[in-house]
Image (cartoon, rainbow, N blue to C red; front, side, top):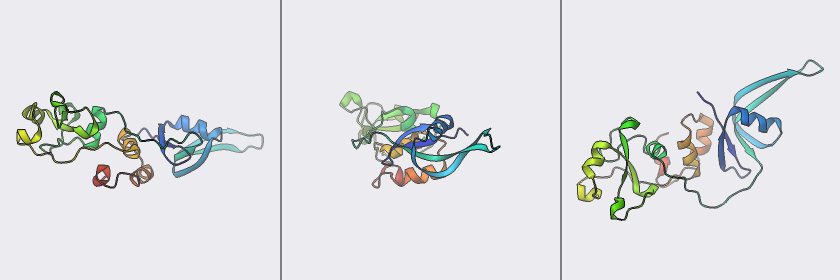
Length: 187
């Protein structure tokens, strides 16, 4: 498993997923304000003149100083994040498919004025997407199984890293959208 460290700003907002090497650099430079979670890696260094070996324990969540942005956040829409949001389920037939068999469907087709946004796009298998064609779900006689939503920053960080550790998941999940979103799914 490719373990990542979740980097937060001083307000506790996720900023990035870091490699253990990047996290070790921040810890060694004493740029960590606070940390949470379990140790994800222990790094053993050299010995000092007293024969004591240096040890660096890397926590799974670290907070660093820096700018705090209170603006709205909507991640860029991509098929990989869309399919992750919808858990690789076709939101028309409800069947889970391999990624290669999935496509992006616009609930209101773009040719009819629909936008290429999180709230107008869902995951569809190729069969359902072809069946729906250039129609709305109502016109095609197809029921949408879930309401499309734009993930918040915490949901995005979950979707962007499929190797989220339990303590990182607890931190992120506590800030998922209350009405809809990933909080309605079992993670």
